[in-house]
Amino acid sequence: MFLTKIQQEKYADVMIWAMETARRNGKFKPYDSVLLRSDLSALPLARALYAKLIARRYNVILRMNAPEDFSKEFYLNADDKQLAFVAAGEKEFQGGINGLISLRAPEDLTHLKTVDPARIAKSAVAHKPLREILDLREQKGLFAWTLCNYPTEELAKRAGLSVREYASQVARACFLNEKDPVKKWQEVTKQITEIGKWLSAMPIQTLRVESAHMDFEVLLGEKRQFIAGGGCNVPSFEIFTSPDWRGTRGVYFADLSSYRSGNYVKGVRLEFDKGRVVRAHAEQGAEFVRKMLAMDRGAAQIGEFSLTDRRFSKITKFMADILYDENFGGKYGNCHIAVGASYADTFVGSQRRLDRKMKEKLGFNSSSLHWDLINTENKTVTARLKDGSRAVIYEGGQFRY
Image 1 (cartoon, rainbow, N blue to C red):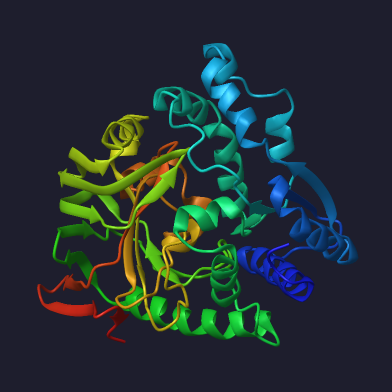
Image 2: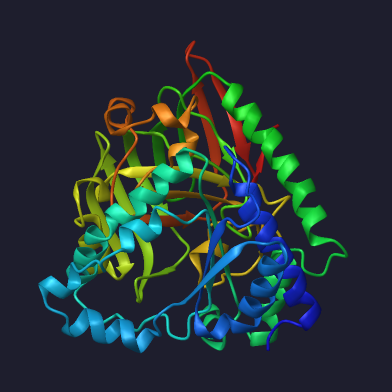
């Protein structure tokens, strides 16, 4: 057990707070259905969560994720029909749950390195309609989700840390050493939400990011807002939006390595023109990157733009987990983009109005992929406003708020 019993209990409290907070357009009620999905190695946290969820009178559905060797067997040997298979009743199941808490505790981060990424993509595309059901329920205020990481020896090893060091980073990042972690999260969320409101109120036309290895610009688009924290990830210090993908241009560079679908990639460099990736390179894993970007039409387009202020995040080490790395604080904070699917909650206005036709009109991206790529370099982010003036909004790792 890498976290103490007291830390497990506090972690469980934080996860329930996060799920309930994430339901922005509605509130949970007694006997709502909550799916608790967990990797086997996260069972200590799952037990604590299960007891607390039952005590709060939720109807809890427990599902264990397939171990990595099962996933490897599937992606290596399933035929095309099996790759595209969706179990009977799964759509109805997804249409009935009100909450999801996902606990990730991987025992192998490179188990799919010998699998053709196109096979992984085929299965992801087939399961996209299930995610769309949850997306629609979330827009209507009927569903909310959150996820977290549980320390494992594999995560620590890949991050170049001891298990004790890794668990310490998790505890610090999630405020598990605080007397009342939930209260601390409420305080931090309030602070970063104020910055999100400040950004949302600015008449921003474009955002330009300049660092040692990139010069990159996104078009904010109409009817956009910036979201801060909000419970969907633990930890979450980022302030993000889903820009109009059609206005993306320039070079984006991810200096932080990442593990994706059982593959390791390092030094990803993407060149955008007229909204799409026209050239993709990586120091390691370049072929995997290109196949992911070819997953579907939207995979080579941007779905998210995000900044994290170093004053809030306590994450100072590479964690070999995108959930933590996209919230990296360190010396200069971080910027990250996601290629692939956009987030509907960055739309200003009633989520019920944001149907597929409106999403296309406003430049919200649609894809089976959502892959965060992180830059931790010292950078300057400049907003070009609608009146033509410019304002530096972020430099030296923090917002100029």
